[in-house]
Length: 111
Length: 111
Image 1 (cartoon, rainbow over the protein chains, first blue to last red):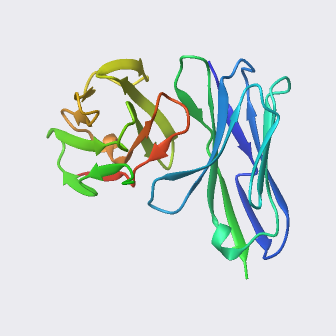
Image 2 (cartoon, chains in turn brown, red):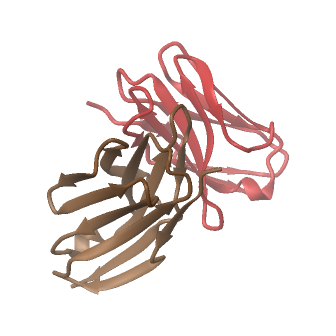
């Protein structure tokens, strides 16, 4: 059974800092991995989708990497802004299976 | 292009009642999945439908059921509500299970 963990559970940084969020999964036989952000009381917004054959994906100030063999993914946020404050979740999907979500990292970027 | 629409946005029910939640996916998307989100358990997968067929099912009791119509719209039903069913219910659509697009959710409170 796939299990997904995220470290740290919460993070508070001053504006302008670069930061890294971590996601670990127990079964390396994944089909893809997706990073989301969630604002309080809202749905999830997809940030980046990495297929199992890929090593990383980039979108603007965001970069996500995937190391299947070690069961890890990282989300790098460059030059953080107060608008980046949200909960970040990673989710992994096995072939023909549903997405399994991590508990999330709650990020606060202080002005 | 309209996003994923969930109705109603908020719902208050009493124990023992039943409830039906609705989800209209993005036009052209044939996959709809449902999730329950609570502070204690995080995001948990309920079920996924693709072209009117249930493709995957999570570990929830039979009180939780769903269906998908020919226009890809989906409904989920919870019968005999319990206090523990209070949660944010999220629906996501995708073309075929790849990148997920979430609705804003239905906040269900069971009194």
